[in-house]
Image (cartoon, rainbow, N blue to C red; front, side, top):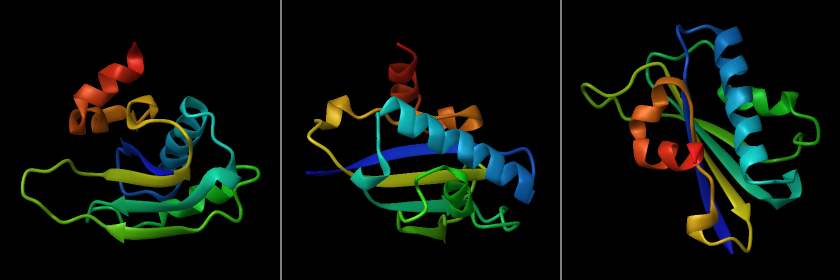
Length: 124
């Protein structure tokens, strides 16, 4: 079974350093919370809001030991008025026997506002 694991975080400004740092923190948290190995991951899709142009957040995955060969792609979010800005989102497609309810989605920083229902689950 392939399941999707969602995650998101925000940065304070459009800076390559900040985007890569916060994305790496997010990825490590997703990996830890779901006890993932790179071999389980079919692909990872990263998206950014239109105000983030300093770098590709997928580059952060290359800094994580053992994750070099996981296929990644970046895209841009739809610019919906009043939506969360300076946001990096992740959709990780993993091979797992876990049910949807057993998947731990991770929302950090201001991105908690995107799915407070799932962020609260994470804190329990």
